[in-house]
Structures are given as structure tokens and as C-alpha cells.
Image 1 (cartoon, helix red, strand yellow):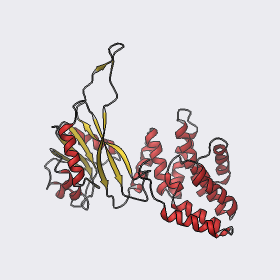
Image 2: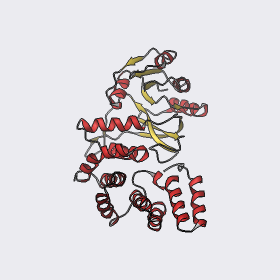
Image 3: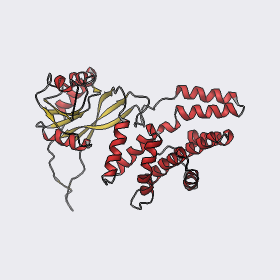
Image 4: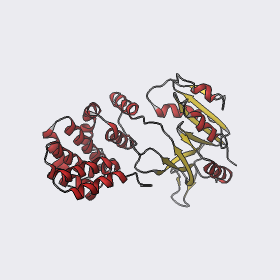
Length: 341
């Protein structure tokens, strides 16, 4: 049977920490808690479960905090958890089965993350596989009988374990501020962070957030080393920023450049909202319909969700089509995140 270190970074989690740790006790051989500056009872609650509690000054870097937590682990595998996650009894049993039977060559175990937040989330489905359990010490080995090479890709196992995400709110404001600070320090966002920043902006970015992001995404758009996906994300963010900030000529130029290739749902939706704000509801209807039914999202599935469905319904109402207006209001009421992507 493998042994497991549970590693967590926390700050002001008194409302949720106990439920999380209660669910982790059965699978943990040690629990490592790294506190990044709590001012509530978080550390008092943590002491009920472990003596391995460390302070780590917050430096706007989650990776640094998690690396510090991992450095304190001593068991075979490390399970990384957030305070708003809970594993129910049925999945604790599945976890114990994995713990008892995991093959030594497996280096990462993925688990199903259940997103129970219907709104204000960067996730595109209710259920997605995530790496959660990591082998603490990796062994490198040679593979292939000829032209041998060191195996670098980790051996990953997709388990059936489900983890419930029970967040009381979201951390978008904190996350957007962290992105701005990282960019201000001259950090180049990798492909994943480039996408996550765009998602956060689309979920909750206001005019100030979008305006602050414009220089970064304008630079990204002109950077030949950025991938096609990153370039499309940049166009989507800039289209929304230009529209909201009233930069009409920049908005039109950017949208025309996008739709002459393969239009995406985000750009079509931005064009639809532009015409809606201008009072041209027939034109808005066309573009919103394309956003919802004829194109694919680049950044967020929410672009095809309730907000734009309701806006489309309003366009139908204003253009004298109450039957379709009612249809799309009903679709807006019924819309929810897909189970999986």
C-alpha cells in the first residue's frame, strides 16, 4: 500500500477547512498545511488534524507556495487539495482502493473534479479530470531496445474518484490582480496562463480590468511566437475591451480581421452586443444567433449561455417575433454547464 502526504496551502479558510480535512483523514498518512497569512481561526482548526503547519509569506505566487508545501512532504505520493474540496464516503472508498492497489510505475493519478458552481467559473463543464495525486520521488528509466532514450512523459492513471468543489464564492478579483502583478513584473504568461487570464476576464472582468489587459493582449497579438490559439484568445479579449471602452474603430478593425477567417462565438457575440447597444436589433439578432448556434467558443462556453440567450430573446421581442422570444427565454432558463467537455 502506498503512503500519502496531503499538502494544502490555505488562507482564512475557517468556514470550510474542517469539512475538507474530515474527508481527507481516512486517506492521509500525513497532512501538511502551509498558511499564507490567515487572520481567522484557520491555523487553530488545522492543529486539530496535524502538527505539520508552516507559515509562508505570500508573494503573489501560488506555485511557490505549493512547492514549499511539497518540500515538507515525506510519503510516497502527494495529494494536493484546496480547502473548498470534499470527498464523500463513496469516493473515499474508491480512494482507499487506489491507495491499496496503485502500481509503482504510476506517477500521476487523475481524479474527476466536480464543479458545483454554475456561474462565475472558468470551468467549461461540471466534471473534468484533473491531476491530483503525484509520486513524490520520480525514477528516471531508459526505454526502447534500440535508439534508447530516457522516458520523460509521466505515467498517468485516470481514476474514477470524484472530488466535490464546494466554493462559497469565486476568487476572480484576487486572480485578476495576481495576473496584473505578474505581467507588471515582466513575466511572460505561458500558453495555459494566457488562456486562464482570458477566461477570468470574460467571466468577471469589468471595464477597468479589460482596459488594464489591453497592452498585454495587443502585444500578444503582435507576437509571432504566440500560437494560433493564443492569437485568437487575444482577439476575443481585445474585441470585448474595445467595445466596452468605446474604441469603435479598433473594435471594427479587429472583428473584421477575425470573421474573414473562421469566426468564433466570442467575436460574433461581441458584434451582436455592439449592434444591440446601437439599437439595431435585427443585425444584433443575426450575430447573436451565429454566436449561439453557428460557431464554437474559443475562451468560454458561457458565451453561448443564459446571458446571450436572453439578449437574443430580447432582440426577437423587439423585432416583432414573440414566439422565438419565448423560445430563447426558455432556453436561457434551462441552460446549464455540460456534464463533460
